[in-house]
Figure 1: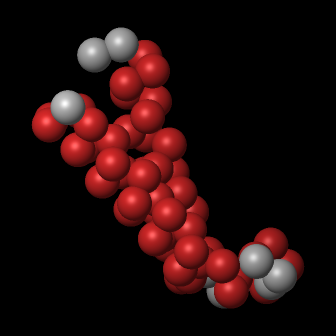
Figure 2 (figure 1 turned 180 degrees about the horizontal axis):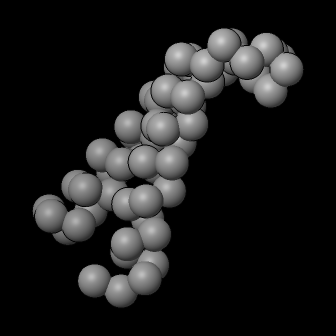
Length: 59
């Protein structure tokens, strides 16, 4: 695996982790305005990760 393939798996994981941090955080100063988008981060990250895994194994 080269760097681009590894990075294509790490970036969606970052979105999923960011969504979980926004959901579980109680810091209103940092996540006050964007806290309502936590689910979209998780769904987008999961979709991107699934497409990367599909491309890697089946294409």
